[in-house]
Image 1 (cartoon, one colour):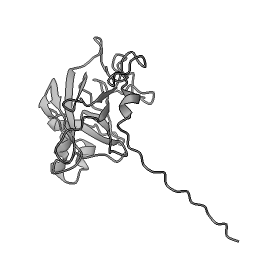
Image 2 (cartoon, rainbow, N blue to C red; image 1 turned 90 degrees about the horizontal axis):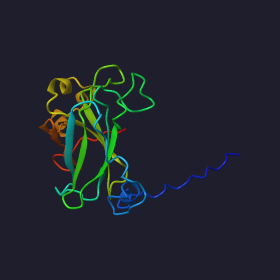
Image 3 (cartoon, one colour; image 1 turned 120 degrees about the vertical axis):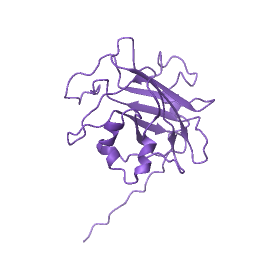
Length: 204
């Protein structure tokens, strides 16, 4: 006799916002006493090696309006191209650089800001060097699953041209959505969720 299979129903989806800020950036929300400072608010100190840079931007919806309740996390290598991670086997990363940051978009203007260092090049899984880049993770009210993307640097044209991930983007004009505007030490990286300028998001 064939046993009847009991299938479970899928749990209803739940967006990250608006309560994500309370859990991840309580000081930003005016909730004191949880952390001395919100985790990820500072990536560098006065001993961090490498070129200091500032990355600013907005998360823009399909109507062209900046989201004022989004939260951004970034991950990146240090100036020597090493990650501050237990899985980093190529050497020791800069102990004065966290390698990750977290920032909510401003309630007034929707702008996020990271003070960091320009990352070095890291190898792709097949050994080819990737261009310097910063990985972004975006959550907000209305986004059911966090979105991943990357920011590349406009002053690294030669490295960008041989980057394995950028080379996989079929519609070449869309690769431009992953390249920041500006020049060192100040870069602007706007993330478009929908529309003509929609940013390329990564399925990882």
